[in-house]
Length: 181
Image (cartoon, rainbow, N blue to C red):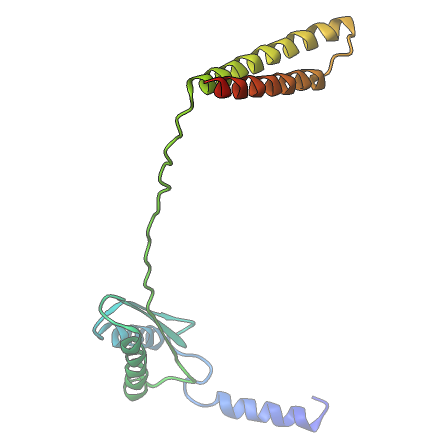
């Protein structure tokens, strides 16, 4: 202790610590205070659960949203605060938190759209294109396999170009058949 302020702080600390219950609280008193806080809150109408937390410096009250609306929830917190002030002795402040959680859950389904019916020629062309795609995919696999062994320079781009060309011709064929009918 080198400064006069340090001596004053030490004197004030020893005077404050000399009060009964200033430094420590018995476990029994602590547990009773927590139980009393929870009891006060639980006695109220519409309360589902109550928890004394932070060493009894806060109480959280969970209310039933079907029994209490927002205004009643606010009044409940005020009533609990008043009852705590009247009935309990406690050091410092006690925070009262009232929670009203109302959840709604709805699921929506995407309705299936009706498929448009294709004409007979359209179905034939679509089927042809699908078969040609499979054919060219198989050809691509075979040629890439043999190309590996024979060091051929075949790329998938050539096959894609062939498929695009077939698509163009099938579209022309489709237009000509629709005009003719």
